[in-house]
Image (cartoon, rainbow, N blue to C red; front, side):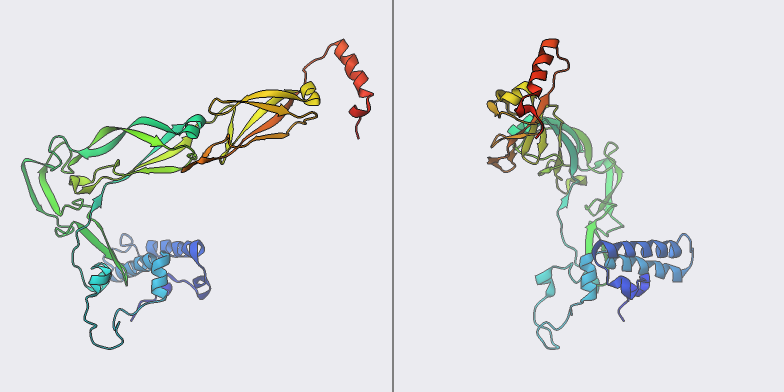
Length: 358
């Protein structure tokens, strides 16, 4: 009889109706409570509690995963694909691979490519570098082939034995009611062998930490927080059994005191003395890449007015022909003090109709 995972975790009919994160919160809360209750450390030599603990873990594995929960709620028959009771004449492993129906007793070992761990680093760039794109050399630490044992993990006194954890397969299996997955054996790192009297420098892993220097190219338009992936520049897996992981570069934009970025637009201040704002004037501004533009400040400009310079902003990442704009924010500068003559002139202007509040 099929196990009722909802009943095992004590999930009510109303709670069953929940979906996504809301349902997962319920599962997490129920699982933690029951796992603490039936944990083997609290129930030594209690077979019933041990079985309950296993059921709770299995229920959590299925119901906390959207895909597995859907497959549990809507099971598909694993038999009789041709409408009759007899075999249809083909092996399901030929279609789905040996892992698909592994939960039903089919444990044929497969060879898998082991990938080393990825490395994540921060990459600080100025706004100008982001605008133009940049090529930089960086140094970071990663695991590479051990120089003392050439990656074998052994010495002349070493010898190998079959890994007792995975039985020499290099992978361990885990799964629930319908599906089975496999992962790299934590004991042997996927080699299927345990080394006795290993290399003292790498402890049998076949890898050691070294400094790597690479030249990285970042295209124009990268956004702060964007993660760029550079293949095969990460860690080597233990014993060299596979391929290197990747280098993940997280872009971090260095704040600029004159310019502020908003998506692909660049905002900046244009300081205009109040008399120039009244009369109108021209101003020379500098773009992020050093070009000079002439800006016309209209007569009667007010504080906070915006001037837009199309196509002088940040390029769109992946399409350098498309650029944002530069947007100037007019900031009216008032004199800190005036002399008697200037005061008389301003007093006279107060009487003008154009300077009266309307």
